[in-house]
Every structure is written in structure tokens, then in C-alpha cells.
Length: 424
Image (cartoon, rainbow, N blue to C red; front, top):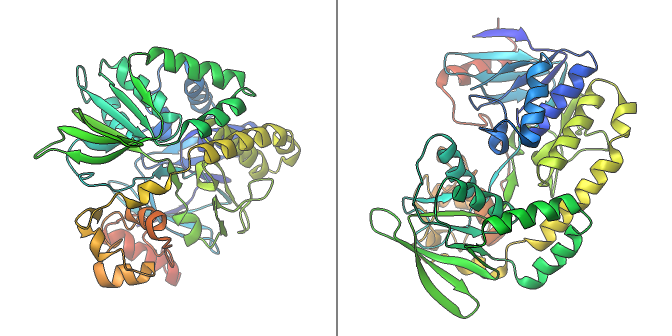
């Protein structure tokens, strides 16, 4: 295992927040190293970005700023006291030392279980988009989009532009909450116009409020989904179901490095500093707010890490406005109570260990769930079932332990050597 000094500033994550942070820090003359576990920069939202739009603008700036980028690299352990990270690539594991660290580690989709949600071709909204970007052909396929949030419109439009048929967009929020959100959206003409353009493009798709998936039907693969809208229940034929109920901040690495966590994610101050010295956090890991908020938080963190607080302060007003919009999003699209009652006794909750709902519904703590059922002990390490049990039962993980992701034995040995201070 090798070891080396990374840069003045190491940025973990090459999504919108990480890219913005790297660009601003480089503009201030700092050396910057960016790490990401994807094969290219852009994160989930900007992956495969074409030659236009906000993503392409920032990706071009990132390409021209001369920040070093290491892709397909996972951070499996970290030590804030020694300012070291343990990374794993396809070829090796190595330790990396940093001067200052910016965590821009994003978020993951929140899934809520219902009968049949593990049926083939039932996917997360972002997951299906990623597959299409990677070459999955969906021309002529019927795709039901269900869950909550304005990203459903963007995803449905993406599928439509790839010649899929989107018969239904099922939004679990009711019309009253949606109307209040639209009133708030009037303060953001650009976003309102964008929503109107998306909806016009999807004019042939039914947009149904107070509507959610009760079950997915199919034997070897998905054949239809059962939808409920108030008292009305029906089956909708489809080839794919793209579903998602928002996002959950990726806070595990921050917790491992003893950064304070609050109810929205990693706790940060006005300059995006965490509770650990010289560690900053920006983007969805600090709270779900969308690309615009992630960008301005990344810019703020980049300036602050480069010791240009004067430039960071100029972004405070813009960030405050973006956070107000994020708060309106959270109020409008919070999951409804009926979703807690969807799992049946035999519905799988922990997909890694095949743990069903009837074995979990009486659990009083996350530790009990792990000890009695092995829930959360599979390859995803609770990333999927953890937020599910938090929503369904109010259970929260007790602690985070390395490795942050499943890792090779070589990487675990390397992490132990670092801890003992004998790594050469």
C-alpha cells in the first residue's frame, strides 16, 4: 500500500458541490485533488451532460481549472486527527493525507417498500436514468414514474425524450400542498418556467396528485403496478416502474470522522465548516436542496477552505435564497402517513439479507433489528434499509464503523496499519 500527500485541499465527491468547490479553490491558487467513485466527474445529476445547460458550464470550468481528479476511487476509512483517508481503486489501496478536506459526498435515493418492490424492472428514478445514460434502450417501453418531488417531472421528460411512453406520473403529495408550493415557485420565475416547459412536454402523461403505488405485479419481471388515488384503485400496465421518495444525505464518512450530525445532515456553520478542524461539507450531505444550493454551498466551501472568507461572504444571500426554496420543497413533498402502512407481512425490507416486514415491525431499536434479523448487515451496510426503518419505525443507526463501503481485505489491513501508525 502506498501513501502520499494529496493537495492543499482534497475534495471528496465530483458532483455539483464538489466541482464548484474545486473551481473556486483553484481560482484562489490552491492545489486541489478531487476524489470520486464514479468513472467520470458530474455525479448522478450531471452524468452524461450534453453540450448545454448548467452542468456543462461547470464541467467545462472544472476541466479548465487544472484540479487533479482521481475517479473510480472509494474512501473506505478516514482519520480526522491524522488527516488521512484510506482509498480503494480497482488496482490498489492507498492512504492519502490532506491539508483541508471538503466533503461533497451527496445523497442517495430514499426507497419505501411495498409488496413487489423487489420485482425486476422496479427501480429507483435515478437508477433507471443512470441505466439509460449507460445505454439501456427504453424506446417504446411504458414507464410509470411514482413517488414525490419535482425531479419526477425531469426524469419523466428524460424518459420521454428517449422515446419511452410515460402513461402516469403519480405524485403522493396532495393538491393543497402542491398549490402552496406553486405559490412559492412564483418567487423563482426561472424555476416556474422550467416546470411549465417540462409539464407541457409531458402533456400526454397523466399527472395525478394524492396518488401512490400500492403494489408491483409480475412474475419474472414487472407487468403492472397497482395505483391508489384516494378511494380509487387500479392496475396500470407498464414495463418499468421508476420510483423515489426523495433523498437521504450520505453522512457516513462525516460521522466516521467525528463530524457533528444534525437532523438535516452534516452540521456546518456559515462558511460550511464542520465541527472538525479543517473539514468542510457542502451539497446534499448537509441537507437536501437541489443542484443550485449544492453549487453555492460548494463555492462557499471552496473559498473558505482557500482562506478567502471575504469571497465566501458574498455568496451568503444567494445561499439563503436557495435554502428557502429547499425548505419549501421539504414541506410540500414530505412522505404521507399512508406510505407507512404499505408493507405486508411478507414484504422484504432488507434486500441484502432478505428480511421481511413481519420480523422487523416489533423492533424497538436499530441494534435489536441487526442482532435478531441481520437487517443492515449486508453489502449495502444499511444504506437502503436504514432510512426505511427510520421512516417506518423511527429507528436510527447507533454508530458508523469502517469500512464506509464494502472493501477488499487489503484495504482493511491498510486501514489498520494507518490506525497503528506503522504504514510506510
